[in-house]
Length: 210
Ligand code: GAR
Image 1 (tube, protein in one colour):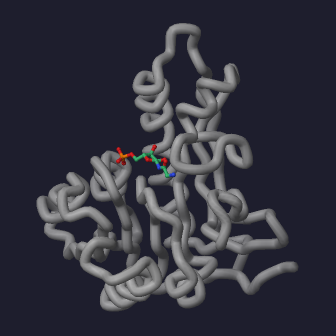
Image 2 (tube, helix red, strand yellow):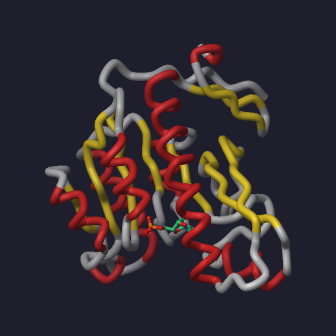
């Protein structure tokens, strides 16, 4: 099924959600062109990504699971927090939780996730570890549009990275992240400024989509 083209807003606002160190977020903060990173949210108050956002003068919000009675109310809390920033596009950059129904039903089709493996291989929280354990010679990173599954959404862009004989999980992940930062910067700029269209599982970027 071909969905309506997603056309860019005049001043695209991008929300980034992180759980960890936020080096991908930093790449976006350093290279955002034609759009604004208008907010950074996290499920962890101690995420270094929040400090990166504050240093860049970007508003932040923390939505921690422990502050909610259950997962369903946390999902609703995350939606409320996101809504206060009115984003046009949401980027999960090292966000280590599954997106729940509340956020998906409001922002579905406008949430992207970056993953450190060539999906559909090695989805989930341990993409680098699982690829290394499987013995693949090539892995990489994928940017996808988030759906209700775990790393199952339509693929927007991918890039390959060779696995070296002496790679550890850390060395391989670091090399993937070098490539992943550039890929994410490119994809977010294109999606925010020129739009995209989803046709079945195929995603087309750019003005042709409009
Ligand atoms: C990235 O490699 C990203 O793909 C991964 O976390 C890293 C975040 O790096 N995300 C996932 O594994 C999500 N399942 P960073 O904190 O340095 O930006």
